[in-house]
Length: 221
Image 1 (cartoon, rainbow, N blue to C red):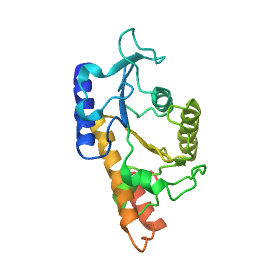
Image 2 (cartoon, rainbow, N blue to C red):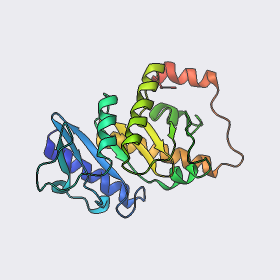
Image 3 (cartoon, one colour):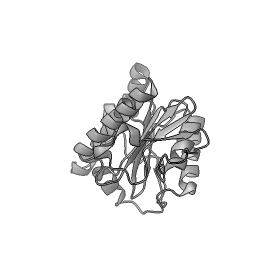
């Protein structure tokens, strides 16, 4: 995909997410990998009216040319994800209501291997394991280090992850393209909505059912 098309596609995805309430105000950010750097939303950009020219182009070291605007404060996190996850071509970060709300039930300083249990086959197939990482301030380089460590640990265990949940802040989801990253984010948020709405809470899929999803669809669980 050319850089011009990628800029257009990032803006399409950003506006769609904003229009449907996955982000609000100037929250959330997106980025995409280029052969020699990255495109990323500017600090305090509103995804609802994002224009292609407003995306900031940074080089492989994260430097933007003079006058290009300030890249998102989460640039360090995005760069670490790209370095750690070879399949990541686009990263979407939102403050999705159900996911953030669900994190309120867990102590803010607590890490968990799985933020959500495997309650639907499409969550297992399309998203997979989503570690919860304890709260850190937005833009803190230490958060980027912890996300990179979670990706490396998942690789070591043979179940690569495609998303992480930052406590009280929101998910970071990645995929090969902006459209695929948006679809993955949607599946993750919908699973959180289902979990919050269910009373009583559903049992997770059984070991046999999970194994069937691995064998038939290559699910990462």
